[in-house]
Length: 217
Ligand code: NI
Image (tube, rainbow, N blue to C red; front, side, top):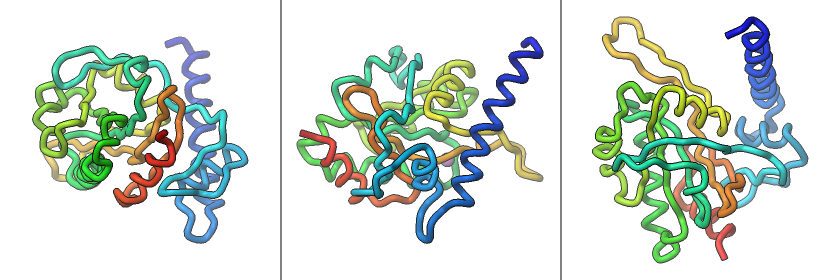
């Protein structure tokens, strides 16, 4: 990388971190960082039905090329036509990821026939260990409809950038294996590929179902 590109990347990272930091500080009582972040990005309407309703024009999600658990290439175009629930994590995650994926599975069951119109997607931030075979085994534990996406390090980095997902490899002291530190929001994307809602970690399946139903029809 040339020095200019390195500096530009650093500036972008710092700018993004600054908004998150400001969102953290500017939280209103009872408000999550995600809601505060969305509010800082624009004139966000009050949070509704389980998620943060983002101001129109908020751009998250973007071009990506990944591979699913059956070895098929998946791009942003494959997300069109249905709503998508997108969550980033990794299969070795000890706590947050299993909880969120379990919630995702419950959402799909609770939607009943409407589940046909929703595509649940789990994208790994640990492509070194999460091969398509590993993803297949893992997402199958939670719901048969979940698509597990992985790719090269660069492909995963591009997808994470598109959704502004933070992740970092960390090795706890004394541990032989690394973990991935990562942001844990679930994104609800519209049929047109635009972001519709952002769910904080720990949101209930009921709240997600309500937000999804508000975006169906
Ligand atoms: Ni996790």
